[in-house]
Length: 102
Image: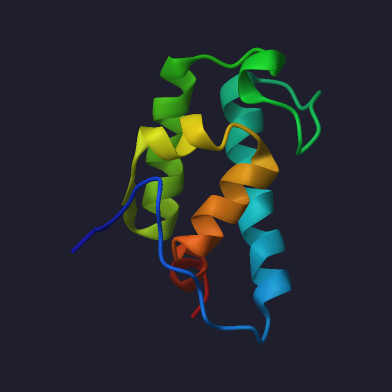
């Protein structure tokens, strides 16, 4: 069964290795951006649209992140969080970290 993550989520209550897990998730988000944009000339705080992104690329990024986390991810989540850091935080708050760790 695939869980859905929209623009609102449930906070992750685990604090043990949360920072390391968040960095792992951030690395995955950044890697999907690099693949889609075909360049890495952006910071984790740059807006996706300002660095050459467009809506068709978002669908691909969210599909790949959804497959990685085992969750159906709303495109709205990306539009509401258009930087690597914002999207990482939104995914973490929605529980995506639990899907990445054993």
